[in-house]
Amino acid sequence: MKKLSVIIIGAGGRGRTYCRNMHAMPDKYEVVGVAEPVEVKRNEIRDMCGLPEENCFADWREILARPKMADIAVIATMDSMHYEPAMKAISLGYHLLLEKPVAPTAKECLEIAKAAEEKGVSVIVCHVLRYTPFYKTLKSIVDSGMIGKVMSVEQIEGVGDIHFSHSFVRGLWHSEKETSPMVIAKTCHDLDIIQWLIGKSCKKVSSFGELTYFREENAPEGSPRRCVDGTCPEKDTCPYNAYALYIENKDGLWWKKGFSHIVATHENFTDEELLEKLKETDWGLCVFHANNDMPDHQIVNMEFEGGVNATLNLNAFNEGGRYTRIFGTKGEVYAFMSDENIHIHTFADKKDHIVSVKETEETIAGGHGGGDVGIVYDLYEYLCGIYQGVSVADIGVSVSNHLIGFAAEEARHGDTVVSLDTFREKLSCQND
Ligand SMILES: NC(=O)c1ccc[n+]([C@@H]2O[C@H](COP(=O)([O-])OP(=O)(O)OC[C@H]3O[C@@H](n4cnc5c(N)ncnc54)[C@H](O)[C@@H]3O)[C@@H](O)[C@H]2O)c1
Image 1 (tube, rainbow, N blue to C red):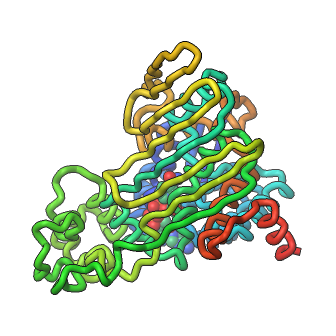
Image 2: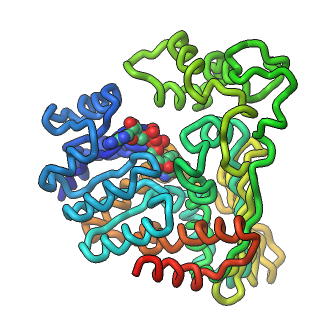
């Protein structure tokens, strides 16, 4: 069996996940190099994969200054650090497993797609939902014709109150200026899924939403700038109390682990050291005093070819979870990603059907409902030319679906409806 060699660029949460999944498939992949400035993370990859020190680098520029040393480069740096390493790796002839978003601007997304096409390399964007048993089952239901022609789709991305506070108020994505607009950073996956299910091009978008709740004026009277000051009058009832979430949290939910992974400088980081980090990083800030600008609720309305329409509702005010409703000419589907069952109602026989979504052998339970492992399986088959599935999409498809989000931002800020054709034309004039 052919083995594909891989380098990891950015060994944070995502880079380490893909590395672990690839390392667990030794007949398919061999990780041969890493670039990561944080020593403890770099060493984790080195030790896991048995890398020689000379293949471990502190910066993507160093590893990509070398002649091409592998088949695939995994690019899992932060959003604003995708474009440069992606363009350089493409120019060297690497295939890419590129984290989403492709890039924070529409122009950079289009440039990456163009460069990949010209060089003849594959760039697979980590739209991990496409690779989950849940969405693969949903897609097969739609493609079977059971619900007739799709007329409308409703997608809800319930980010979750704590997840929102952790990532989009205090966390790495608290500012769209530093990363990407919320609709791209969080829901380029959902836009991609909507278009994939409908199977047509998006023609028009409008969008509404803003940052309304996690703002200074909603801070409890007398609340200090940092929860860890311990003087907040609402510290015992506030769900966002940083001390409770990041130090006292013993319930196994991922915020504490996620935070310690980001700030840890060595192995076995202690609670005392975490507390010190809460005193100096944004994760210790009160959620109402956090200098954040990501909208906490936003909707996107879309019209596709043939009059098919869709809505995306993304918001912070829920426990978390993705819901998809699909309305067809012969039936409707209701699906909640955390549920094991997809519910279908068909009109002709007035019957309810339940399709069970079980983890398959191939998609051993894991991050993103099995998607983090699924994408690594499918990438292998795709690059070996033996792929039979429907999940892998070309970078061109991913970029088109990102453009729906960028156009939605133009519509939201301009309080208008944006035509995707006009939006693309404007971009291509800017590129000329
Ligand atoms: N597909 C998904 O569902 C999904 C989920 C979460 C995050 N993401 C995306 O994955 C990307 C990474 O997110 P993350 O949560 O792993 O972030 P992270 O901050 O944990 O990881 C980024 C890593 O890049 C490293 N880095 C910084 N400068 C570098 C350099 N010059 N050279 C090499 N590495 C460098 C950082 O030290 C860090 O370890 C982001 O773009 C994010 O939006 C995707």
